[in-house]
Length: 142
Image (cartoon, rainbow, N blue to C red):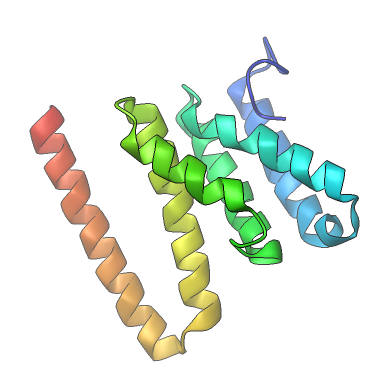
């Protein structure tokens, strides 16, 4: 997977490409694979939310949103617990990884569940909120 314990010495770009390949393959194979394999993938993804590499955090968020698209949030009860735990952390990498995953799941929900007009307004609000948060974060922490 993407976590550093399995890929020591591999460049971030290779790990990121492997993650995107995994995401693409999951879209066609996830529902038909054994539940033990699904659970293994999910368990290996969650620690990647706190990776030191921003690209790995982002890629894991992308894969998480793809899995949620296929099985729903209720099909992954550990996900919400882990995201809340990361958001409560004092470690900024965990917080950023959780926010990235949440934003991707949120946008996926908007695009798949809301009418186009409503979705575009919600997405605009979401990006304005993101910009405000970004500016606030940079003023407070830099």
